[in-house]
Length: 243
Image 1 (cartoon, rainbow, N blue to C red):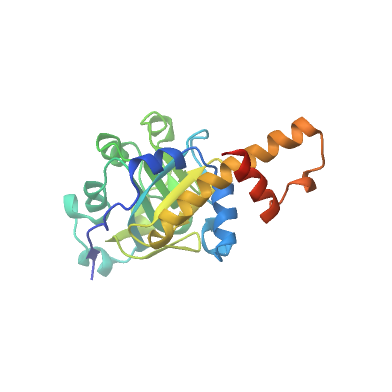
Image 2 (cartoon, helix red, strand yellow):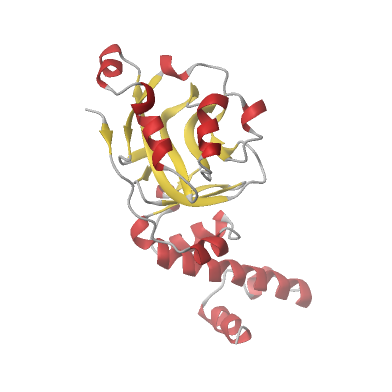
């Protein structure tokens, strides 16, 4: 049976989101690793930026594709009520559409016509483990797009959108509706909704710490081992310098 659920409320205020937009995914992974989250379960290594230079953060609204089969096609809603379009209408500023696309590069999850609606609704972007069509047009929509690559193929012969705001598996990583996604040129990371406030605050500080270390090493002409990786002693010196 097709599932279409509401999206859990936003839990980050805009001031935190604005600061987190300047934090690289590498810093977020480092912080989450220090908080017992194995990078294998939060980082999507095979998903690449389709329009380099973009960086997005937002609440996940999920869509799950299943392999195309006539009986499944009959069961699911069609037209405006199809699960991917239901997700589009739930999304707006501060949201990211995240699609489980069966790890298939040649399966298109959409292109210029579908993604026009995301532009109209001012969605932050889209992340998938499938392919994206019509990049010659879509690249100008202002969306952040991440996937396995470009494709010219028609996706409906390979997979069909089957649920909205269900727990999904994207590139081997669990994404739940309401989780937060951060994506940049280095990759894509998911932050579980239950811990995102704590991780966001720590990641903002850690990103600033790394910049402080880089400047210290450059000024003092020292080996990285003097301050990196940062231990409690380095953290104390850093925090004292910020007072």
